[in-house]
Length: 160
Ligand SMILES: CC(C)(COP(=O)(O)OP(=O)(O)OC[C@H]1O[C@@H](n2cnc3c(N)ncnc32)[C@H](O)[C@@H]1OP(=O)(O)O)[C@@H](O)C(=O)NCCC(=O)NCCS
Image 1 (tube, rainbow, N blue to C red):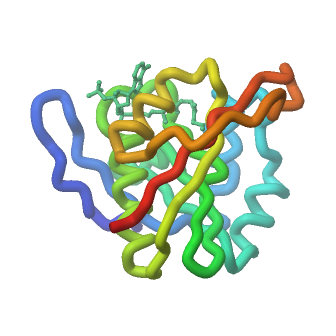
Image 2 (cartoon, helix red, strand yellow; image 1 turned 180 degrees about the vertical axis):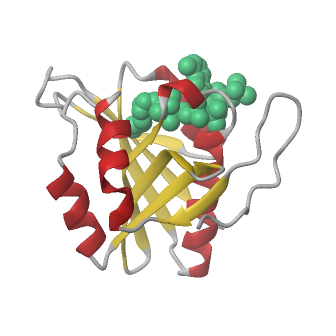
């Protein structure tokens, strides 16, 4: 069951729980991912992440309902966020920020020195989320996304 490690409740913000995910959440992960991802992940792909020792798959919970997730790879002192999504009905309540804060805490515990990611050039919401969490723009990868040839902005967070 998710641990209540959010202490950000104020105003419209809600207290969420965050926990490492297991196979019982696979169907729900696919459901959340397919709600926003044009190249959505299959159940097999999430299964592979669960089996990958480098992978960290963290779930955001409202009560016992999974409403978001973050997937990242950690190799030595580097981490790369490969996917992050919040159920459309639960956005703008602090959940995405909470997932990022949780992951950065985890990185500190694992002695990770920096975290990188790619985000679509058109995805202002995610860019604002990442900037707010301390990520800085690091570069541009031209035509990175195969579905529409969109550029990716690469972002990087140095862990103090
Ligand atoms: C990006 C995403 C994860 C944000 O999740 P969220 O739970 O809504 O994020 P939060 O409520 O913690 O928002 C934190 C900040 O991000 C920014 N933000 C979030 N959504 C935004 C939007 N639609 N427009 C502009 N800024 C936005 C704001 O600065 C916000 O702070 P504020 O609410 O105080 O203004 C969510 O919109 C999502 O799942 N999008 C689809 C998947 C996706 O794009 N993933 C990123 C792939 S790289």
